[in-house]
Length: 495
Image (tube, rainbow, N blue to C red; front, side):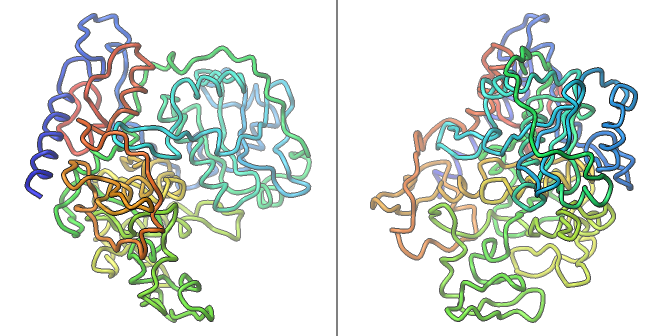
């Protein structure tokens, strides 16, 4: 433990020093005309935006079918101020019969099928290879070319198609990738609700057609042209370790709020479940909960809480849990619930069914005991798909500083001194990046359940290779040893 603590202390100190170096991500280049020097570096607070109380009043961020219908009726006349290009709509899937695709006109309005697989990538953070990360610069440029997007002129809308939780996650991944790479909030929107609801609520069948637009593959725009650094939207392992408490407690005054968007069963490693959750823990499918939360039918069999061949289940120290499903209204095409309802959840107030944020004691936080004004919210789940929904709530609707731990629990649980299915420990005992020592967890019930992970350097100096590579792609200059900067002194150049 002593060597691990010393190594982390040195790593955090190095990051703090790097964050204060001249150039703010541009290495040691002192040329005032260099790309890095001209880059605007945004903090999570500056990246966040606050929705109107009535979502119909939004012209970016979370927009409604009513707004989209008005835009489509006469885009050149109705487009928001500052938008001079076309309306580009990405659907994560086709909608149901009769509402498959929001109808393009082929001149000003285009609707493309773009599943979440286009907006994620397996990448290496310097220590471990992790699935479902934000795409790299070359991949983003390829998307700009494929769909002929100019995000300095066009309005881009991420839509679900068929409304369901998976497509709500997917539209969040589109928003996240574009925002991370510097697309301005004025040019980016998330459409509230799936097509099956929109076609009867605020649009008509005449606004839909059976086919999507064909990708032109003739774009020329590069995200290098966006002289904005929004990489603090992503939190790395090092960033998370820098802000976690040393024990499994949620501290109201520490300036951070770590939101686990997964199920209670996963958060609690099978020691607690939410009503309706534990059908797999009893051979007969019996339900145990008559209240909001309860003990599972069979707490000794917690294998059902595991995903992706994980080595363990549980949560990082200090995390609090509220499942992503409670952010959406399934009766309205899985649209986001009203802003006031979401704000009440974030405050810690349980809803009418008794559901609210719980902490490591497995008890409700209660009103006023969850998010504290000024906190930076860190959101995660298993692969930061479910957390796209909670992140849209915090960063796009409620306007709170938000960072996405993109590696999520598939990465976090892998950074463990636990034996995998080959008989080897995933991480050596003296690696400074072991996260099991900063977690509440229960190990896998059998080592044969634990997938082999591609750990490339358990003694790496940092875990910021992805962020640094993305900074370098934009500037053409080395990003040095800096990271996302979470929990460190304020960035001297970036708000």
